[in-house]
Image 1 (cartoon, protein in one colour):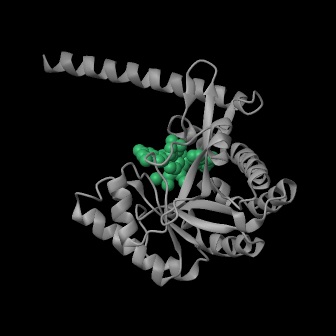
Image 2 (cartoon, rainbow, N blue to C red):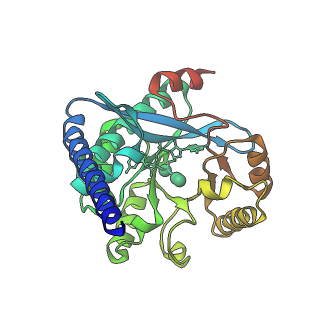
Length: 276
Ligand code: C2E
Ligand code: MG
Ligand code: MG
Ligand code: MG
């Protein structure tokens, strides 16, 4: 019996593996066509000042309008984009798109909205990132201090001999640098001393149970205090309730981002929101 069962399991495993590989290859091929076929779209999620509740920034979040699968979030394709190298051209596209769009919103409103753009690890380690950012700022006409690049700790610490000079060069251009998902990487805090960082984004996992879990609350508090001591800005991600916002405000967190305030929205809807 055991043998038979084993064989069946193997067969099942092998079939699902086969399906998985097929699906992945399919996604890979689809992804190759997506950029030239104009299937990507940038959504924007507002970031709010904790005191005035005014919109002070926007995070650009990539979406893929897949011809048969519908609107896909990065969870479905970003890893494939990374492993195929397609993330480089997609990432450059997002950067240009977001900078031009926000420049337009800035001009329409007279507000100096900040735009946050996520950088993948491979974008961050490419040697011409600096040139790409410089060119994008020039072509979009965006003021450098209104662009914030979001990088995860893991990406930032991949090769510090390379990344420290790159971070300083980016800083020299005048852009802001944020650490995304702060507190979830396997890193020491010492890099905060040597890296020219402007913002810590408190990861959603600490915000989720901040009202009921005293450990999450203590961690969020520590991040805010650390940021204060180093004169960095803090943004809490994934704020879904007013209670979470209240706790974070009391801790001194500077800015909020999350479904409670607004979901990521397409350009047309965000244009309406900014007019009100
Ligand atoms: P992230 O940079 O940490 O972005 C925040 C994610 O949390 C977004 O997911 C956003 O939709 C989601 N979110 C915002 N508020 C809430 C909330 O209140 N509750 C919950 N549960 N979630 C919330 P999304 O858009 O699916 O993006 C996932 C990740 O994909 C991003 O995480 C980022 O790492 C990556 N990503 C997105 N756009 C790009 C891009 O243009 N380039 C690169 N390299 N990565 C991107
Ligand atoms: Mg981000
Ligand atoms: Mg994040
Ligand atoms: Mg996150």
